[in-house]
Length: 327
Image 1 (cartoon, rainbow, N blue to C red):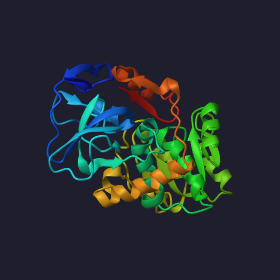
Image 2: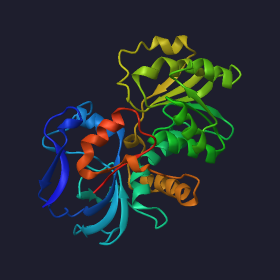
Image 3: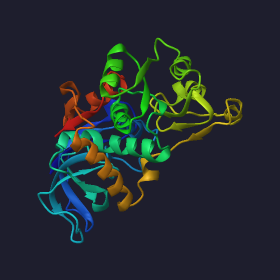
Image 4: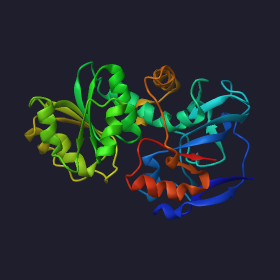
C-alpha cells in the first residue's frame, strides 16, 4: 500500500482526499518512480475543477514529478532501478508517493539538477521552450509582452528571454512581483492593477507595440493583449487562469490590424521521444549553467497531504514562481 491524493468528484480544493491505494507493478513499458518532489501546475486546478474533465472516478491528480526509479517493466530499455529521473505529461496521479509512468515520458535527470529544481521547472520550462523557441521564435533585442511574469512559467520566461538577449515586458499584480520579475531578467514590468497595460506597452515601444504577446491569463486579458499587438501581430493564448476565452468575434482580429491568434499546448509540441529529448536538453543546459535559476520559497513547499491547501494558495494568486508537494 502507498499514499496518494485523489478526488471522487470535480469541485474546489476541498474535494482532494489523502488516501491509501494499492500499488501495482509497472506494466511492461512502464517505470515505477518513488517521487521525491512533485510539481504543482495551474492545469491541475483545471482538472480538479472539471474545466478539463477526467474520464472516471476516483481519479489521481498531477502529471509532473522527480524521483528515483524503483522498478521497471519487462520491456523497458532506457532506465534501471536507482536512476534519477523527472517526468511530466504523465497519466494523472503524480500527487503520490509512487507513480507508474510510461517510459517515453521520462528523462534522466542530470546530477547538477536537484529533485526540487526538476519538479518545479520541467513542465513549466518545456512550456517556455515551445513558446519562445517554437510557437514564435523570439529574437535578440526583440521586445515582447508576457502576462503573469512572476508566476512559475513567467519567472522562467524572464530568465530565458534574458539568455536570448530579448526584452520581456512582464505584467504583474504588485510591486513585490515586479521586483521578482525584474530580478529574473524582465526588461520592464507593468502593474496591471494600477496601469493601463496596452498604453504602457505603447510607451515602452515608442508607439510601435509588440509582434507577440504570451497570455496564460485568458478571459481578463484578451482585449488588452490584442490592443498591445502591432499590425499582423500574434497572440499566443496558452492558459485560462482567469477563465476561458469564449464567444469571440473573429472580425475583431481584422479591426485591430489583421492579427493572428493561436491556442497551443505542450502536447501539440512534444509528440514523440525526439521532441521531448531536444526540448529537455535545451532546458537542462540552461538550468545546469545557471542561466535559469529555480528557487522555490519554503512557504510554497507543501507536504503531500496538504494538496488542498496548496491549491487554495495557488488559486489565490499570492504565489511567486513554482510550488511543490513533498512526499
